[in-house]
Length: 104
Image (cartoon, rainbow, N blue to C red; front, top):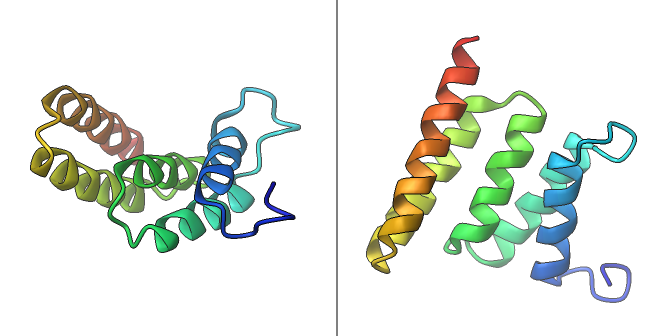
């Protein structure tokens, strides 16, 4: 899908998630995940919490924990503005997880 439509947010975001989080090291590719997730965020002007979450996961895949926390903090603001309290709580839990990984 990305070859046919390079700016397709959902395809870039979904592939970035897979490349960032897949358990198989042969599939996982943090650098490409970051590239695709950054593209998704740029296309959505960093205003959609889903690509922000994906970008955070991609940053974790390349050990950029502070950047991951920053993206999730942006997502929390957006989620709060839209009244999605469950997602706010879940995202804050991820923030704490990523912060703890940065300290390891």
